[in-house]
Length: 238
Image 1 (cartoon, rainbow, N blue to C red):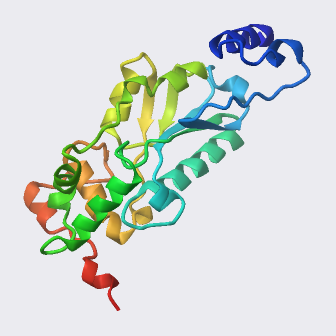
Image 2 (cartoon, rainbow, N blue to C red):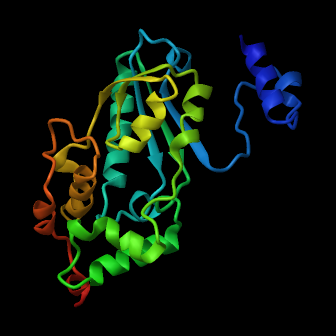
């Protein structure tokens, strides 16, 4: 019930917001908690109902692409595609959810990410899929500092027990979600036509190490990766 939800929110926020109990006329609660934002399309009441279609994307922040439109990665077009799919699901009676996490640059931070980009673009022979993860390792000493174990908490908080369409190719996110008991029916890769030319380096490198491409993306070999090139630094000179 709504009253039970209000009681739970009041308790989980350390009783910081008494209006949850005293102002039942207020139907919107936006807690000042950083780290993530949940966007919902359609009727939120349908989210826990496994008989009603649900589309979900768990998106990690990428300021360079999401905000400034960099074409070095697939983050922005994949997020836009997820929003379209969420809207499409909502228009047919279901619901769509995008959870936007502030995990910039695989939680390595924006400055580190741009140092990696600089290394990739200035590498001998240019940006190459075969060196995609190595460049991050050389700069940061590790390829990823995102810990996905707690990521599904937001989904459980929403009452999600089944995702019909999971708009993600990430094996780490998929494994984290299903390990907590949430069922995923369909995994939806980014349509190839939405992948920027310069982002082929990223997508091919990720599919090679285990990102789920389904029938859409062929898993490249190590030799194949050597032939996948992005723009070098010289391409920006002029």
